[in-house]
Image 1: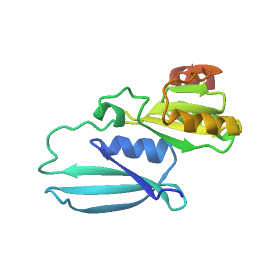
Image 2: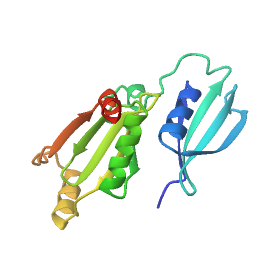
Image 3: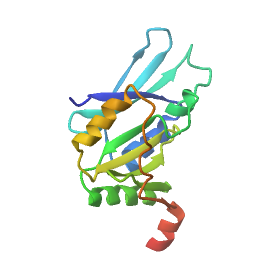
Image 4: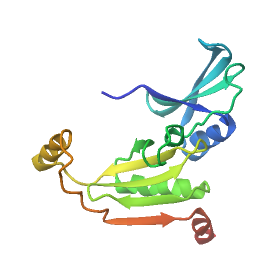
Length: 179
């Protein structure tokens, strides 16, 4: 079952709007404005990713939200940035390449990794959260499923093969090549 929306807090709604609407190409569909259950008030913005599927952002105002708070998913949890991230579906390698070029053209560096069963591209949003597009390139086998089930209860398992390739694409290099 697909989710309806993922909701995150932000301290810089203008930067979030630029990234998700202008760079990512998502359509800003709705804002809800009103009081919050613990005081203060909020604006809740909904960006449509695909029909009836959204990523949403809370812009919090007044007490008790005046104290600075961390908005990066992993940093807020005290974890490395790659742990908690948002991954968007990419149906084909061609689509993935178009999203990579979209990010580069928007001034965002992109890490590209072939994980042997999927290929992903990554950048950071204005909150500092790692954002990914991922396309599945392999097929799952019964052995994959058996290993995954065994890993739920055991740490005595072989490590997965390292990524087939990793490449960093710099936005400045992309812009130079486009000129």
